[in-house]
Length: 276
Image (cartoon, rainbow, N blue to C red; front, top):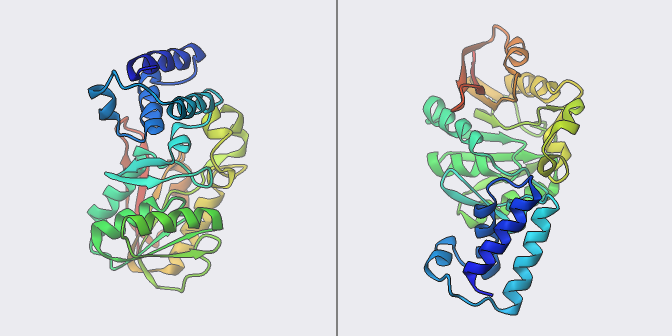
């Protein structure tokens, strides 16, 4: 079995399933992972004969993907802001949309000296902002398993981030941070059935679902950020679909310079507010 034949057969299997987006690209990523090579190797070596162990790995990865397991959980990695992060089913898979949080933080609060990432998951926000700014950075999560993944990412990317196991920011002192960022759970429980199976069946529920309305975590974040931030400090959060109006109602008069940042589709994706 050559690389070329393996790619054709794998892509066809994924395409026939009908629910796998970009089947050819997925086959390439899975085959490269089976070969322990970069994707570019496939294009330069279509005649490469797969060993038995390579073929077994590739077949297993294809089977897992056909069962709905996200490609990132199969390969164990996902790029975010130009860096590779380790991901497992203990953490959400970083999305390109979350890079808007980083971009907004760098634009509005690039001079922050103390940064907190609340509900850090893989650590992608905390690690990225620490490396981009050189600030002292902390990251919290209620999941010890997620914190282990995040700490490993910080170590591999040489980012000095301190990790704390706690509920949101309950372990942090008042007036201790210049910038708080978060990609919080914001999916209402009633919308679970409508999620893609890759998300619903594989990603951690406590990182997806906020409660009946989807605003439960936002309410707590806004409230406690007013305690933890220094005056003039920034709170920057990712937004769920159609959540702008509900979050706006939480930002009382003590919050100023409120900014809504759209994604490439024009949908509000990030909210930023400074504490008055």
